[in-house]
Image 1 (cartoon, rainbow, N blue to C red):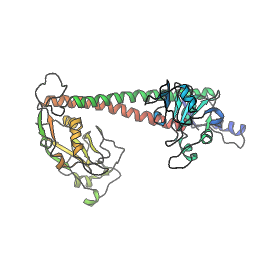
Image 2: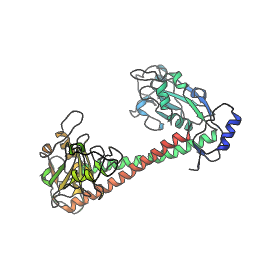
Image 3: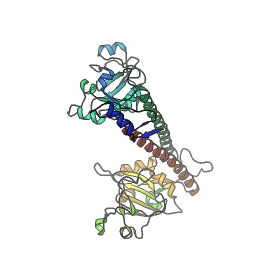
Image 4: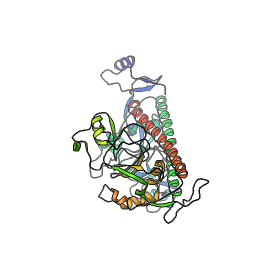
Length: 433
């Protein structure tokens, strides 16, 4: 990346000498070869402002996209998700100006501060504002610079049931900027980051869609006893069973808390697996991270120790997340999460993990859930659920392995996305003033 840290005594002397009594505005880190303080102006001084249309168009039969706030889901925008388009005549009738390519649009009603660069000319509704950058400001630099001004926009907005920024509020947004070459360098860097993020997001979404499709086709649908697609060499009908007939027992500590057994959570020790950190296919160790010491573990889990690969299921808030114990470490089974001890000659653990997330089984469990905002399912209600299971353990193994590989790929892209977004956020904070 070729950035330098802010350890610049020479730069500080330059600022004090050239701008006596004026704070030198510089970012925490910047690219090598650039020095000197940044300049501050208002966006209205750096851009031409485009007034949104007075009214909503009535006739959508043109060729110019008409965009609204929900259309801003990435840094670039060229069309509306709804596909709405209007003609130049209709735009003129409602007083809407065409926003040219390379302009910057900002959401100014409700969810304030969403920004995007215009890729193809379009028309905005009354909830958006648009700016056309002048020669001394790079549009990409301006885009990313405005993305860190969300808090400012929320502070200056008119406080009503639905907050909004008027023209004056928008034109007053501060922009602190360096020379054009440095602006371009910064803009290019964040474009590259966004390209990587988009790449991993697309792969992640594609894998999720593939998994969803396979979950529907590799398990029998309602009224069928064989799946639509299966591995070569298997043709026998699947067996219908009660879901609970596949288990020797279910480990369920419903209602148990450390205080009820005379103890308390610790700062470290054995991680508690709860309905909040058991996600679809993995354990999130950063959410609801409670730990128990040896005494708590022994008193809580004695005789019910979990093992690697054991299937976990969240029964409430949220209901229906399925994961497996990831390793040979010891864990505490906390509230609203149950663990299954399978009958080995009937069902494989990897297959069970997939079966519980299959479309038909999940829909059955969902239909049995009860409660208010936090829907839950009990062992009693689960006892009425029938499932179809392959009697061939080899087929179960193949299905389990396939989805385990898919989950591994999905989690890798998810982890990479999280890492890249964290890098982007950190750089936005340190590379802008």
